[in-house]
Structures are given as C-alpha cells and as structure tokens.
Length: 81
Figure 1 (tube, one colour):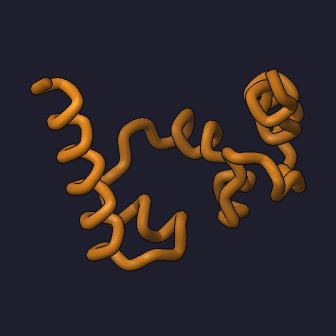
Figure 2 (cartoon, one colour):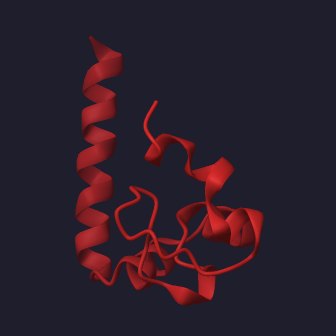
C-alpha cells in the first residue's frame, strides 16, 4: 500500500486539523476551506450537490454533470453484463 492509500490515517488535515500540503496525494483538492482534503470535505458536508463538487474542483457544473453521466453509464454497463 502506498503512502497515498494511507492518507486518511496520516493526513494532517484529518489528524491535526491543518491544511494538507501534500499536493501529490490523490485525495488532495485545492480548496483551503476543507483543509485541501477530500476526506475532510466529505466528513464536513456529507453528500454534496454537483454544484458544490464543481466549486471544489474548479470545474463547470456542466462538466461535472458529464463526468457523472459517463460514470453512471459505465457502472450500468458493468452491472448489466
């Protein structure tokens, strides 16, 4: 397991409540209000609307919607077999 996979156990944002500086982490987001950590964002806000995700990832709402639709289609295709 890599260091990135252990992020919830070693991340300063989670363990110490400080902004995460490890921008190489796969869970890092450039959003200081959530301490730059995806896990902190999820713990603070739970499920989020597409507009909230778009704001955190600095993408348009339309792009987030496109990504969601493609992901759901791929999942449906996998389940349907």
